[in-house]
Length: 350
Length: 224
Image (cartoon, rainbow over all chains, first blue to last red; front, side, top):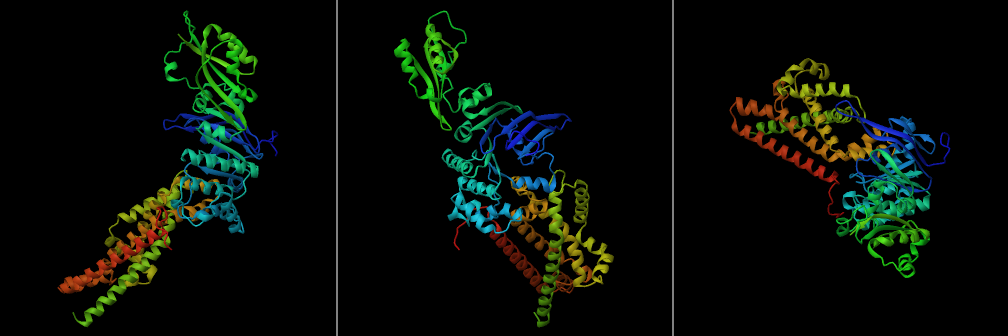
């Protein structure tokens, strides 16, 4: 740890990346990106396709170089490393891929042995056997990738990435080609590895559910910039950026049902109307029966339109969209906020 | 057909096999690395050397565009320098090899280009050197394609070898021309054609069998 005083496993320091265009201009893929990945955590970077997340991830093992700024991995400047020094850094950084990238000409155990052969390691066989056992593929050690399911292939990819005992594991949309059930088992394996080996995992995804399920920290990237970063729980409960909210709407109850979305107006109409509010429950409050209290103590009937209660890491967290009499909206919101909930007026329905 | 003619057919077949085998072997020895280099030396690729790539590409194209019979005659001084003589079966191996090298190189180049770029990226991410990527990823992954390419090259060499009678190369083609055509012995011509057809069939079948054996890209029955 020389240049890096924060103790982060990976530090992006004011990263910029531009690509030349055919007409001679420049495309800015990344602009002024700064982010620290705490050691031993699972950190998720979420963004739409083309947002720059893949370019950012590839800078950690030098598959891409920043045009400006520095990427530090364990205190070493990856962008400045060349040749043998860069290859040595790469052996400390494992990587798994959306399409697995396994060699079709090698069996499961030969694929896992590849990084060890490349590193010139001795006693490869016992190490490979141990890795195959860890990912639960002992029965399939002599199969070729074409004979495996997607989930099995990704397990081989994970074992291969762990072969040289790296300190950092990069995951490039590793579950995007898998069905939801297989995704869960692969994420569980990654979480287990993170826990058992203390490995820092940096993953990119376009699925908020992946971040929710295993990432303790997250960053949202849009148009080549980081628009929001922090602890996953904080961002799920208090999203600041519209891009974050749109990602969240897929996994939480943030979407307005269509029959309301069509009628909702921003200004309160002069006629008797319903106020539509979003309530975010977090921490201990997520388990309190706040809506019943609202009705029983203040006598305000509440109509639930949409919602979900789920867990982000170990914490329960919920989102509800409700409507109630607009004349008593202010009163209700004050009551809820006094009890630790977050509210937001989405609009009015006549 | 007289015993004499049968002996002639046997020795001619032997000569053809000798010429094709040696030129295919030497052609692979030089053509394989050349093909790998052509596939990996374009700008921004593994061994990025765009100028060398361009020059070699031009040389390969130039060699391939010369009709084989012209090539045989044109390089006679070179043949004499290498083989010590410009006449005979061994001398004929030189132009056959010169023709085989660029042909095999292009076939290998195509097979290597078919390897998914994701595999190269994965190997780079492991800290592999360009040479390790070629040896452990590109060549093994391209092996089914390379095998089929070499099969095609051997079949073409069997065809080319019929033309080296022009420099006293002998072999089946020469026998067919001298006896079958010039001495008007249709039974010799027929025998030569039948042997050539069988040779090509055998080479093609062996090539395809090997290619299928090394191709692990599709699931197959696991009967060991």
